[in-house]
Length: 144
Image (tube, rainbow, N blue to C red; front, side):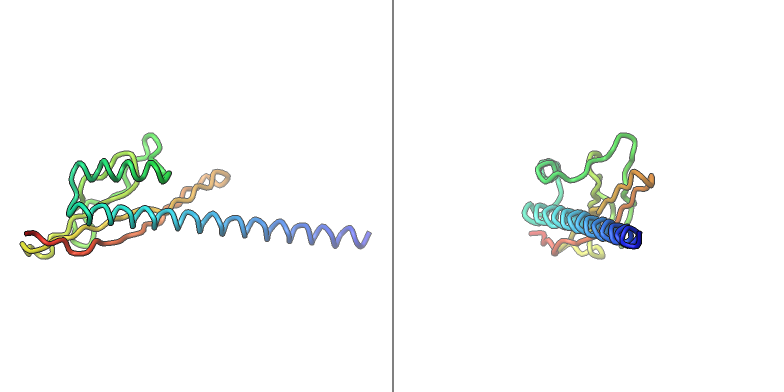
């Protein structure tokens, strides 16, 4: 009887360990995907020297190939209208990312953009949805 009780404790310990490892792996993969999306959006904006409708289409195509999470119906937009003095550029209604325009104190020589993406965790058993923002700014884009 003594060995039976000891093995139950060991099984519980193994189950808890496996759950912790898999949750850590899921968090790491979601973290990686959000940073990858953020970096690619920044690269697209810098390569095209600004945000315009063709850039929006290129970003949408890129997010579709990566498999970035789309909005659920009726979920709404995460974006605030201002962030760190930047003005919100109208984001895509299908993907949870925000782009902010910075005019750098009215300087006519350069401007920049800020990009915010989200790490999302959905816990259906607990009826909980967690989103963690990731923010990055582009390099200065000079006007010629």
